[in-house]
Image (cartoon, rainbow, N blue to C red; front, side):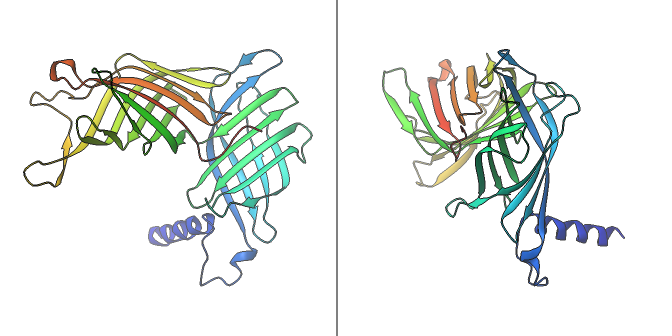
Length: 296
């Protein structure tokens, strides 16, 4: 029974991703049902009030036969106790470059919902929705993992020089229960020290909700980092866990500050990294945006 159940679960997962099934010639006629947990940021412009973050279950039903979708949105108990919003007949457009479906309209089938912007990736199982309720309350609903794929990081050194890295990806994992964030950053190249960070993880950083999104500030977050540098004798790259012989981080982070602007899909992040006693300390200033323009 368990084997059959696992097989059924796997089959449903592939169906949800929108994958073609050679065993099902009618796959194009079948709906894709996508249910996911979304983090809700809610701001009431009329009262200039921002609500606490909530996480709710939302549902999208995609009709392959005509590329339309029905959407069930739950903005959260903090601002709208017991409210569920139903939207139907959303005509999705496929972006051939990204493989994502999108929708954007000033009006919807639900007269309480306006200025709707929706983006869904069935392969990556991701969904983000932005809308206005009753003409005054802006809701941004997205995955708790917030990615910024188009970034620029400026690394500033003590001698007054800078270097720029445009290849990094910033990811922020938001925990709405503990109101903390974890940043994943990589790769990040330091041209002066000739090393490239494959992974930098900064954990347990408190967050504050603002009307634009959230801010993250932490004097000394818990850090894990791994970097790669070339062995001068062999010329080959070597992966190194960034710990010294005492087990301390060689590249700790200090004075971490980040501003995530959800509606604009942008971030501004800055921190110090490294240790003075080893002469490896420098500052990082990162800016970036998600893969789409989120503002209506």
